[in-house]
Image 1 (tube, rainbow, N blue to C red):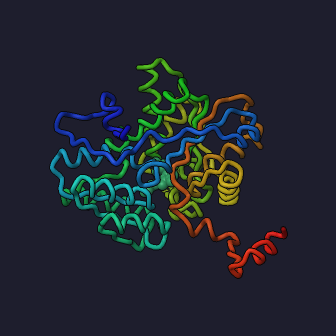
Image 2 (cartoon, rainbow, N blue to C red):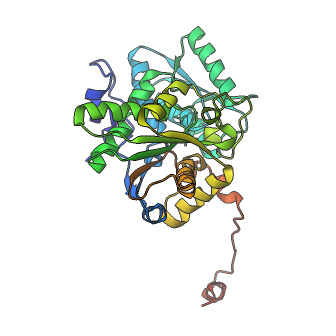
Image 3 (cartoon, rainbow, N blue to C red):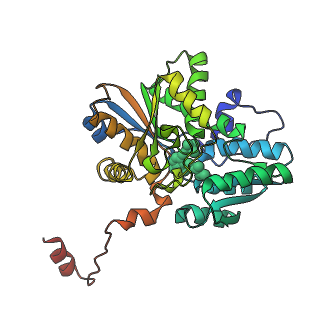
Length: 348
Ligand code: AN7
């Protein structure tokens, strides 16, 4: 069966009209895989939502397809976004698909290479700023409003509408809501959208509501500190954000669900990233591993009860950031092309 994507599958829950183009690159329908090692480690039933399996390798595609379809429907000719990388890759792909030009503002030198490669190949106009993501988003708002460019950051409500479909899929796949949903938090659109999705589905399907557990990087944790961070820093460049646009949405998701938003250090993120690859066979990007780092931290603190059903959202594919993957001591052994050399190297 061909893949019809988020708009087709969840049309009745989305602001789709007869004039909205049936845009898709096959987004959504991502795997929910049981994490065997992590379940043992946490004495819980843990699942990984592999959002890196989306067409451009991140969760952004779900919201982007709806935002882009609505932009095309409204007659926009070009779209603009600020990005730590994944939004730009997704915007560039879906803009091309919709026949629109994309303009992406990125913090110079702070975007993982895979994401930059995507924006380039899909044909975005890439503008690298001498400034951070938060400044890029301010400029996006200014340009978008003044020059009739459709803004496709998550301040565009259609992004959150499409994004909420991930919550629907989790409830459909588990045949219930999890007890806890763990996810990384940057600009806070995703946590806001998941909560909206769980609440809407609870009304339709009578499903329960999970506790929302969001995790920020310790050097970029404005929601944990309660004030914007003017100069955020973390190895997880995707979530290097000091003043999240959906601040209130994140706080509401946390408080209405009885959840929490906490910080994890770069060391904890790196350890969770390595655990997922080496023990689960799942290669995600560093920011995504913040969700697992957070669960491991809560368990160490004695704040994770046994036996709960947990879904951990792995927001982006590990291939996005090959430099991070290879930075910790990767070395290739080059050998003569003989079976003897190979057997000697293996000690057989
Ligand atoms: C892999 O691409 O903000 O809290 O500009 O790429 O909804 O912002 C990316 C964010 C988590 C945080 N994981 O989600 C962007 C951008 C990955 C991400 C987040 C991002 P939000």
